[in-house]
Length: 538
Image (tube, rainbow, N blue to C red):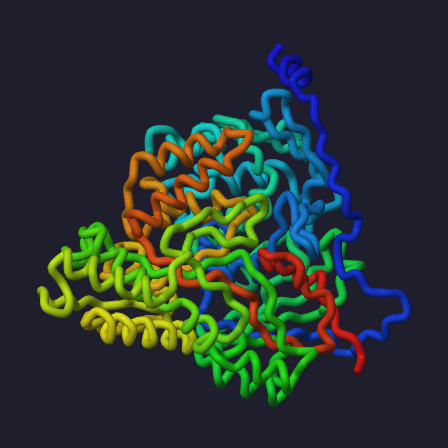
């Protein structure tokens, strides 16, 4: 009876349009003999477990080692991954994904719906303590929130395998962008037998079993990791790159030096060097809009008492000259930010924010006035605090210029603290900071991926900001047919409460060798898959 009711409820089928799955090599292209792609990363990955990863660099690797229900194409559209298509019930509460039957794990076992059930239950299991468990709650998967809070068990999660190749997800509410969320690494399948055999070390080379286009063959902490073609990947025939190497190089200038020496195919552009590099390497210096923001986060839970005064928070935000940071420090096509959500976000209309329309001189005057009203700064109580950032010349440059502005305009003393990525993440997440650098790249292309960060219950609300109206608006947006006005009100509240200071919205700045093809420059999420890249003969 239950099965019959379910079948009748399915009325909408979504067939994905693209048939281009791997490298799209034009006819007549002469490929390079050596298909090794080497790139630089800033820090060691926090984890290569898909349910434990929380970094952009780690996600790049995981999209090679594992494959989720859907992938993204070069413009950010969903294309088939392990799932070929899905059905949606009439009430938009049940998603049924149909899996291809030729997908295999790297050890030759078939990839089944049970592997997704296992992976999704892992993600919400308090015993695993995934830093991204909250993402599953955002997806509105039935009982996800209750499992994360310990009220129910992972077996209660609203996911099931009706057979080996049919994966069903039950939601607690309709979520218009749900299908866009399943390209995220947290939703990838996991090999239960490998996890149980090796415990925490199942992600080491030799132990790891993946279902992606590549397998991990080498991982030297803080030095390098190597992945090579997975012969069991269902589309291995159309994959071109043989080997992908990520080198940990913590210094931007050194990365550029090694790029110039031909040791790297891709590296980040050091702050302030894009214009000169574009002149020198017009085909290799790239800057395109990216779905990421950069902000400063107050610690409102245990930071300086002064941060409890909204006048202080707004004064610091007003005195920050974003044009100087973007045009004179970074010089890479970034966009000054006065609101939290990037304008590149699909369907998002940038709201009118009062202070955005003022001149910098007007903002500075307001900042001085607000700080004086709060009793701090020149002529008032001294204000000093520590600013925490992770290792990067660009982060350091932004921090230095921001603190100079605050000192000169407001008389505020700021001490800079620098930590490597993993330590930084732990301290910021545990509120062991006073003010910290923050940045967020959209997990899916919709405004809630940014604004949900500032909901009281968000696992990444490092400011520990809590506003009942923001929580209410974001809850309403989950099922709204037109969430735009709700997002506008949230942004306006944020501009008044200023729990974080928006600084700029990213562009993707990189040096990329001109013989590397297939880079998704039009995908604002910059979700890359090495299987889509190839190197041509020069």
